[in-house]
Image 1 (spheres, one colour):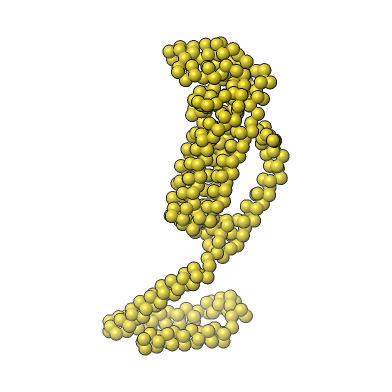
Image 2: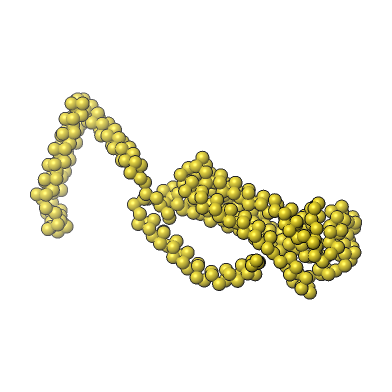
Length: 354
């Protein structure tokens, strides 16, 4: 079986990265250009999407915090600067001197019994101190027993991550904006869990037996904790960015279907019909009220005189002729005005008849 460790992953990223990253950037630019040229306008972030972003932010924050060294279990070889081959008594004597009461705790005593062999110490770097201390059925001659005991603790962060992804992309929380990403998000979370279990299960725990110095030891368990938290954090941040960009129609914009366009058009028509009806009511009131009618007649008489004076000015006439000469057909404008007036008269007659 091929073992994939962190150095292999680093080599793979440095090999594939220069070819993959430019293509991802090109794909992003093409999607953004398509969104900008799309008839779907950019909109504000929907309220439902804010709830999904909050869920993803909390998940990413917890994952990031969990990857910090402060929350990692202690490594007795690192804090005592001991080699893997350091005798058990010497190792735990150093550890006891570092305890507050200069005596070993109960968990230290149990761990001391488990670290009697070199194979157990190698497994310590793979699965951490909790598994070595508390596993009731694990034996060094069968390393898989340690993996079986560690499997629930490996899956718990990913199950919580899948729960957060499912909640953030559920239709009840994010509506249609998040449900379109639900399948991809769940597949990504499941892939993280499978890859994590595969790396831990196939890790060569005996690689540290060939390391002469303590600083060169492969702290696999601690590195995986950090990588696990950072991966979940980056995945949540990426999903949040995609969800926000897609919901605001910046990229991956989905045009509305025929039913949605018809519904929007009907709403606009209803709004315009209501406004025109209000205008008609105001005009009827103004026409029937003597004072308002006289004020309207006076306004239009004064407006007519002002426009006659303006149009009689020679400079205005020359300026209009220079600006509009040859570009506007007077006969065409008159024909459009006649059609517009006829349409208004027909609409008013229909309103009065209704």
